[in-house]
Amino acid sequence: MIAVLKRGTTKQQLDHLLSWLKNMSLDVHVSEGQEFTVLGLIGDTSRVDMELLGSLEIVESVKRVSEPFKQANRKFHPNDSIIDAGGVKIGSGYFAMIAGPCSVETEEQIIAVAQSVKESGAQILRGGAFKPRTSPYAFQGLKGEGIRLLLEAKKATGLPIITEIMNIRSLDLFEDVDIIQVGARNMQNFDLLQELGKTHKPILLKRGLANTLQELLMSAEYIMSEGNENIILCERGIRTYETYTRNTLDLSAVPVLHELTHLPVVVDPSHATGRASLVPSMAVAAAAAGADGIMVEVHNNPACALCDGAQSLNLEQFAQLQQAVERVREAIK
Ligand code: PEP
Ligand code: MN
Figure 1 (tube, rainbow, N blue to C red):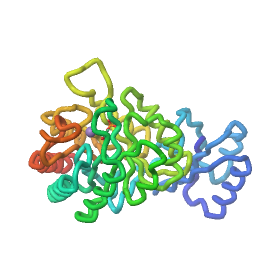
Figure 2: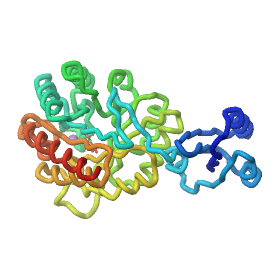
Figure 3: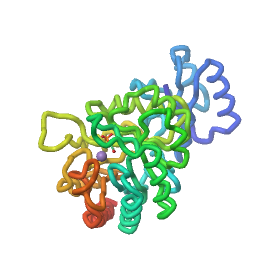
Figure 4: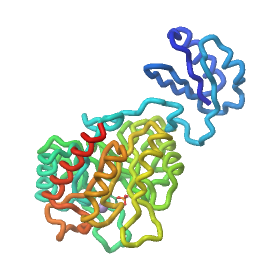
């Protein structure tokens, strides 16, 4: 349920209303916008007398929120959220280019990629240390050593870093990581989501291989319900009957999510297509669709990459993509 307050409501009136609502064992989420203050009521709202609440002098309107996601709902929080990741803002007009290899392989590799993508204009460095591979015989990532190397690259370039967590037991290793990624395969690992909800780290939550947008938002809700509101959503393609591309990029997810939620939306054209030749066109399309950022795989020698070389751009291709995305962003301003 949401209650929109009238302009000019004083702090004292607001506090009075909040304590009345909290006495009914409700959690109240306050969103102060430029025009209105919106109260989002979470819990058993069947006990709230909507007519009584609506009749209060300071209340403009009261509505039930029919969607099962509440804190992620734009109705609860009409303004776009802005997530600060190590000093880089994402959302509400702040656009971030996230680039780097699928996996961290060596110090030379990650430093070379970090320096180059930074020079080309990327704001955040990606690199997998814990890799969720389909085959147990495939390269599983350098794990703790991979995070150490990412931190070296962060020190060398100043770029904030993002890397994927697979198991909450490794959370201590992520202390200096700026954004924790929850990969597509873990989107509905609810225990993991709840534990990440107890941290204040920005979380990039990828859409599952076969999950609806509502399921993605319910997963975000799992994190938010534990107190962490720093979430970035990521569309990375879904399974369809098409096999030419690795997945099918559901670009309509961008405007749909912008309608449904205040959380920023990033697009990953690399895992969506699985082919480097398709990445630039999907990246500019994502920018044109209003994405708040793009996450793209870049390798200094894609042919020798230990993971996802076929979809990785080389350093020069990334530099060109960055310029194309900037031109599109300029054009849609
Ligand atoms: C990744 O970003 O490295 C990754 C494994 O992506 P996804 O979870 O989308 O497959
Ligand atoms: Mn990958």
